[in-house]
Image (spheres, rainbow, N blue to C red):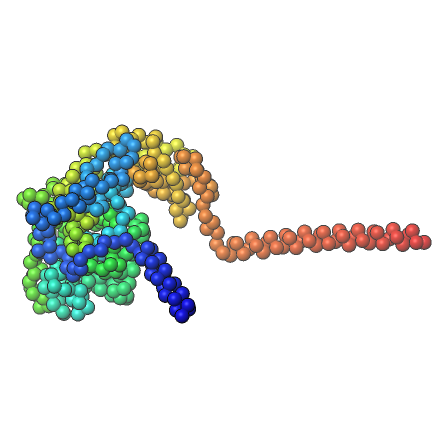
Length: 459
């Protein structure tokens, strides 16, 4: 009997440990929908919808904004979202940060990462076929443009359907098509999504589908989504798609006509939420995720990315506009060239900058240099009280060890080929053997001399 009691206690402890280690996501009512017409309307929720949550809404607005805790930093606005970030897309500086590393459900903003991989791996003329598998992700209320099994459209048309209409079946088909073009399957695409997030510097994401359909193991954070969005500034096709108010997939021998509109209201000229600096973005919504929004903005001087997660109905656009205005109005770029006198850096790009508020000086920054794989370049990163404000790829001297501006020693890891290491080990063994032979010979010589002396004395 005691044996069974001990086994039950051990099982209970294991469950508690697993629960404590699991990602702390919300316990929320189940929902099988993402970006439906009805739910997109939740962005402009009525007062009756908000009233029952007024206290929680106010508490969310009053939650600590981490960048506001920085000495000398311009105070940013409160937001009605659980997490939010404003990032300079060119320098990587975090201008505003509230819970930027907290794991959250992304909903359909997942599709910007799907689009990024499609733009990297596929051609706009590639054929995207709607398979039976791509239709299995659709449940009651899921965003869809009504594609049917066997329909074929181009990758360009698919990206319009995915980014404007938030079509879930098309997002799945895009992932299948990209994977097939690489001789792989859908799981390969998901692996690439997670790898891409890590390559861009993300560390708090786990993507298990290509469209954002609710799954407890499908999560991200504001910082990771901002890093992904910054990369999309490099693709004019993405900006062009997002700036389209309405799009038509014409009827063909393989599909019927489909007409749909842009859902991101800050991109719709004439809409009350229109923002003239907004150039791209993606909406998202599920019951668990609440409103999620990614917005890319460009005022001609700075390119900013704003991400808000788990935002209460009626506030997602006003919060985003307030954050972007805060970024554009309170920060400026400062060139790194001429400010850095490290002997270990041989050249810095002329356009390399950090992004700072007026009250923070370049001399207030901490820096760190990490030598890159090619050995000739390094990543020069600047922080202000541990908050990233900019980075640049610079040319380094040939020294194996080097110091950053703050004087901290940085030692490059050995990149010596294995054969060289083996050769060095072999030479060391040869030298040690030679030394041993010399010592042994000397000992033998001393023994012979001692024997000769004893023999002479014996005579």
